[in-house]
Image (tube, rainbow, N blue to C red):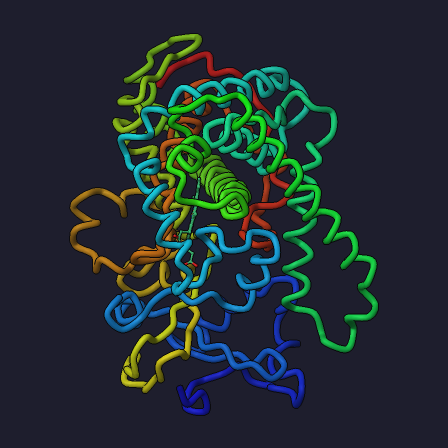
Length: 456
Ligand code: HEM
């Protein structure tokens, strides 16, 4: 692709390229979003000597979603995560045979019908969070994103592998969780590292190797314990991988670590954004509360069954709208698999572009007031009227998110239970500040809690 024909940020510097524009090292995503507003639906940024093309317009994203011409690309940032997750589903190259094998083994475990199996575990962990939040009623505020991350980590650990991180009971973070957070921070920093500063980070390099070794050991122990127990047919992700016999041991470990990476911060961020927008939009919150009240009435301890969650349509619309404004895995890369064009720009086989989902989700197809939080954008009628490729929080095509139903079931259930039980008090008049790591999430967001005494 001839990047010289594409718009780029002004004030490009020799050697550094666009590295100093905006706050690109700390907030690469928000800087790219600001670029999209100024530069239009396709533009380029230069990181040192590497040009990256960003695609944001709905028409262009529809083109790169065409699987006869484009496929997933493991971009440099994702390739770095291979140092933690190897050839797990998320980071596997398209040509690696283990991707297809693992996909075939695991796909049934993520079908909508399988959510029935995970539902009791999801409910159990949701109740643990509620127990912890009850202790804050009328007292100290809760730290929203942190608690959502505990919930999603515990849920995927238990539902996926029968492993209890016990995040709400612990005084300090589980060592796996700290090692994972640190090692993801490390690979992220490596992607943005200026080459001549590498010798300054030898200590971080060593720490990273130790963290990866620790995570591998914990996961290998879980696998060994399951094998030693002789249990079969457990129906969880680990059981499926072991019972099938198609996947080798290192690959199974990579998949477990992958699900822990892919399955927790994304969903916890979505829940945190949804709670933020709810407290800022009382009319939406009242409508959502009316929906859960109609289902659970005044029950002190509602006992939602699997089917109830599917009936919380408006709560689901709220999550979708939160994911529209802030898709928590905000960018994904697509490579041309044939010589082709994007919006008339020629692109050769093997070249790749980055889809910037938050910019796509603000395309004109979403109307004039794209920053407004309006869950009615996701009524079935309006969804049908919109181009199919306008909403991509879960990626696209064959390599789209395998955990989508898992995330949405877990998040709808928890959000429903929280708004049924609590009055959420925006005591600090929180102004959204987004922290960018592998994912995006609100930072410094706290809420005070009261029990709801009156139903809508
Ligand atoms: C892939 C987003 C939850 C497991 C993806 C991709 C996106 C995404 C955008 C595509 C990445 C790419 O093209 O490079 C999200 C969001 C979530 C979520 C926004 C929550 C709101 C989950 C959960 C799990 C999961 C709960 C597991 C339990 C995966 C895996 C892949 C993936 C394994 C790779 C699939 C493949 O390439 O075969 N996700 N995800 N995700 N996600 Fe999710």
